[in-house]
Image 1 (spheres, one colour):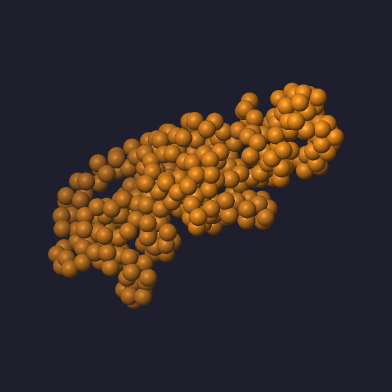
Image 2: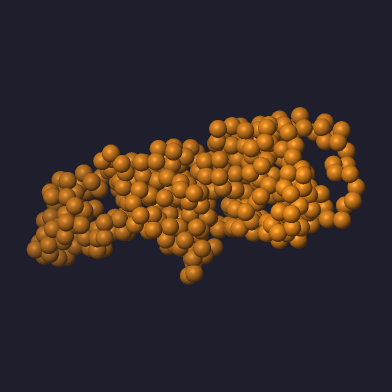
Amino acid sequence: MLAWPLPLNLLVNKLSGQVSTVARWGSFTGSSADYLTYYGKIDAFRPLLEKAASGSLLRLTEHLPQKMLRHDEWYNDYILKNGSCDSLGGKFCETLSHAVIVGLHRTNGDNGPFPRNPEGLQALIGPLRSAARLNVGLIESGYRAPMGFGRIDDLSAGAIFTDGLGRVIDTNRAGEEILRAGDALTIHEGQISARRNFETAKLLSLIANAAVPEKGPSAGCMLVARDGGLPALIVRVAPVRAGRAGSGIPLALILVSTPSENLVSERELAELYGLSPAESRLALALVRGRRMTEIVADFGVQITTLRTQLSAILRKCEVERQSDLVRLIATIPVVNPQAVSVAEATPPEHHASAK
């Protein structure tokens, strides 16, 4: 991840190139949410800092021409209007997945030398580099305090956090492996995408409903096809409290399941394959080993009704025999609801109202 000047400490996931957290100090008054949702995408200085040699310090007004800055939206509407006129930053640590850039800012109206104490700044570089390496080491070992999500690497499922537009903010290790594999879910221009356009559209709709809903946050699930004839992924999307995210904006949590012994819920089975509630109930009863004669008594319906429902289930699930249906449902991955609570997200089992 990546942090930029001390009044604005940015954490960025190099896999997605997106800022995950903004922290502010001193007199700078810029909104963290404004940066995350808009100004971070047009920040003209950060790309220069990312490309700079490790340990070198760049001054904003020396590396971006004044003619450009006079007309630059990020500089005028975010930097100047919120109390700063210049910045000095440098890259202090970088790994394959993260980078740390630390900087100082100059407040508006400050006509003194910048930096005021070059010797003192040089003396701070060593400790700051050590702190940067420690920060990256903690994050890569699974410590996720910057996002406020606890040890999300303890989840067996892939966890991917996005904003309301589907821009990937952070992941756990399993989630990162899924995205890097690229056989089902990938990142395209910072936004999560599936292999097929209609799957991407549905996933982005679930994300929008979870993160930026008009009628309160909701959760949902879907199938995402994989390359090479591999079984489809089960993808669940749930809302995350903005306060818990540490970002000032609501996020969506995407859980990509791994196989388990638990059975999918009736609601999710119905949502995944377009089954009616009665059909989903029947399918799960068959997976649990119930016989049709037993189900007739329990459900209070005729055997002909159950046979009609079973035919519809087989057609919707695209299998030919009841044994194929049992095998299919038994292998649908399920996420432990207690594990989901680690992220303080609303589990898909509950279409909760806004928190």
